[in-house]
Length: 143
Image 1 (cartoon, helix red, strand yellow):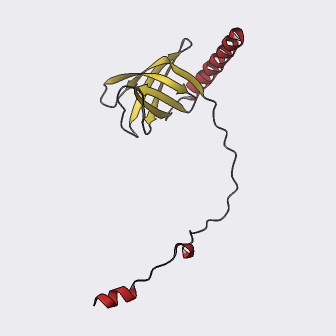
Image 2 (cartoon, one colour):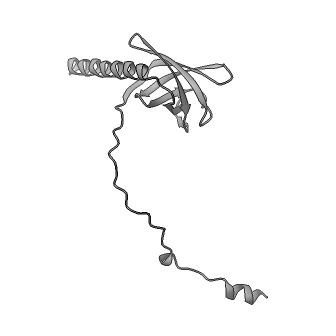
Image 3 (cartoon, rainbow, N blue to C red):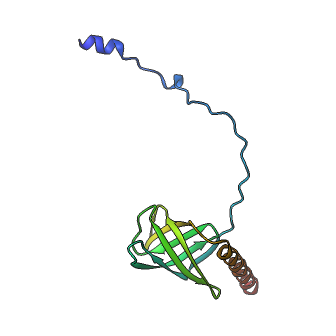
């Protein structure tokens, strides 16, 4: 009986296994929004679904999302509300938390905006561009 099992089993060399090929699709050029490294200079209030709130610092920000620095990570795919001030403008939007990464002092957790209204997106875009301009001026002055 053992011989029957062994004779029916067939070992296939790795070179014979071919992945299924998909038809070639043209790669569309997707424009990614620019990102600004804030390095914790902007604080954010993260409101959880149970109405509790967690404070964090925004490490990196764009009009599509960013990365926050937290003491303890939040669950991946958790839907939260984020409230923060940037250059005298208040941004309030729903966001989804992505997979956290351990940092030397806490956690870095990326997020993406889920329902950022167009008006808030335009304000955020303008404020991030002015923030970039201010940093460029500061770097040029220091050189």
